[in-house]
Image (cartoon, rainbow, N blue to C red):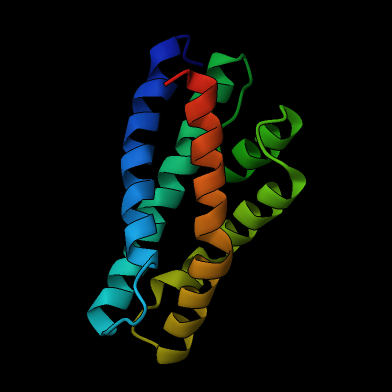
Length: 136
């Protein structure tokens, strides 16, 4: 476990940047094939930074977490996530395989809907919460 109080705040800075990129990607009205692939990729690295930032915070607080699933569940227990946010992030974790198959038209359209309607809003909520918690 890490005891560096700045580690999660440093990672948070990267999450904030990624979340802004994701917001911009989600703001488009229409997507061509390449833009859809970019949307999915932007979501994927934003999601990774979300759980890894939570992991760093939890470790700083004394929790022993390793996997994305344990981080998300422990963040709920530690009251860093609501139950809805927890379930959405766990669903996103499960759906990662689907989201990586952007060459399949059906999968990419489902990924787009999930990212725009569910996953991006939760990442924004968690990012804002962590930003407020950090005092930045």
